[in-house]
Amino acid sequence: MRLGRARSFSDGVLTVLSVVTTPLILFVCSTNSLYLQNQEDLGHQVDVLFPFVCLLVIVSLFGLILSFLSKYQVLRVMLWGYYLLGPFFLVYSVLRGSFTATMDLPVSFGIIGFLYVFATVAAYKKVSLSFAAKVFGCIGIVLLLNEGVSFARRFESHVTGLSSFSSNTTRSKTAQQRMPNIYHIVFDEYQTDMFQLTLSPEVKRKLSGFIYFPNNTALFGRTRMSLASMFLGRPYEYDTPQIEYLFRAYNDRESSLHELVSAGYDTYAFLYLNDKHAKKLFHHVVFQKDYAGYAYISDSKSLFISLWIYANFPAFITDKFLRREEIEQLKNQNLLPDVDPLISYASFRKYLEAERYLSESNRYTFMHLIIPHFPNIFYSDCSCG
Image (cartoon, rainbow, N blue to C red; front, top):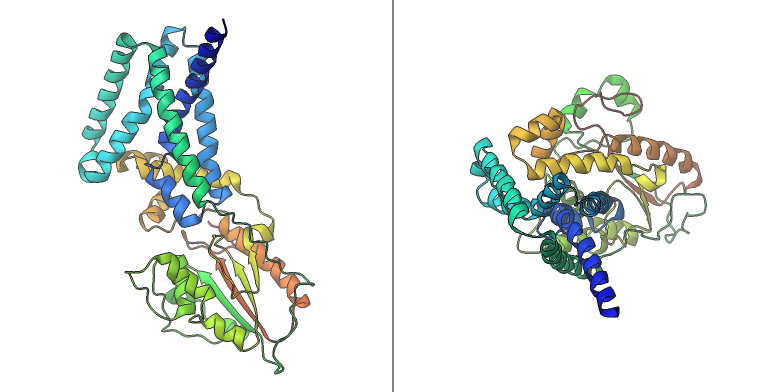
């Protein structure tokens, strides 16, 4: 009797694991390039990985419901379709990666779809569900172990533990000489041609005291690398890892930040990008999302869905589900959540209120603010039109 209970328990565990296999392949598996890029580029941030895990749980629950109700013929066919969706998605992704132009044709997508339906019906008629549960359950174990080991090895919390802007974060001056404050503000996607169009006589008068370098251009299209290049002042050497270039920009003697610190400046960073890279040459680091008090998980879900559809489906499908602005941003690799300009706006206003408590000299403040990318319409609250 105990042996029977043990077998029943093990079969139940395998059944649960079998329904996890499909969402693992669709959203979290290491073969999914979208998931891998979000892991590597964004440093395993919880708010970035949350939509992947959320969909994993939701789809797994749907699979469990199909499994429990598989005594009904229609749901049994649907369960087989659920099991085979992962493998067919994986095969299509591999083929699309190698033969993108061919696999993005409607006829190619239709052939894959026909083979998927045919395989589902054939499996329903020829193979038992108990066998499928065991096979996919074992696959699920392997995938979970692989992701668990990968996550444990490379996970680094994005919580920095560094202080926020407030009245008690002012550092004591290390230099005897009293030096003027320096404000270094970067408006993301505010190109030179746009800036020049807004330089009215009134704006020029309000900006008196600020220095404008019209020939200063970014070295990279990617924001993270472009920001780092400003502090290093030299191009990236492509035979070295990008992480090394990023580290030197904020931690090394080569960085212009090192000169500021050596001169006695107290350095503040007011950042949009919340990544895992150390920034020891900044004495104080504040991330805008945390500072502004915004919780935008719902927006992350919407953004994730757009990314996933664009990454995994051909153009004739994405054109029907995504907005034109989203598609253009994805093509140019500068997709921006609608809420991000609002976060920058709210956090910047909060910073202006805190400015009165900060030191009046020997302070360098760097700000990376997000403005609307597409369309380029500026409302008073920094929202997009």
